[in-house]
Length: 135
Image: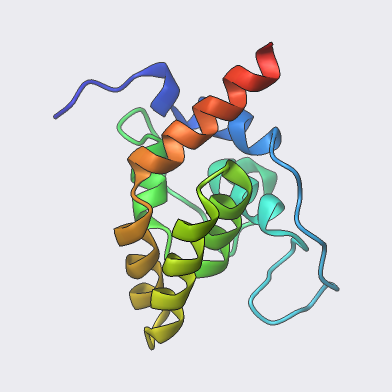
């Protein structure tokens, strides 16, 4: 198993997502949303089970990291929002969205997104944003 780094920790991922701009909120009760109104809040609910915004309790622990979470998400809206605001190239986002729309299930759509934008690309984009905001 590869050694986990601080830049792959859940804590780092939470800080990185908090630093991203929020998407436009939807009205409460919108299908596909729970107790949150933005995908940013949805991510934070996934990453912080104590926040109480998730649909069900999530497993946590030292054996889980940001890459694990990203690779387990089966909600394309979460993934699309993240790649859109993290700084992934626009052309890659367009290709990703096109392939994801062609899939018929949430799992298929999410897998298509991750095929085009694996964790490595997201992590690099988030680290670039982090470095840019530090200067």
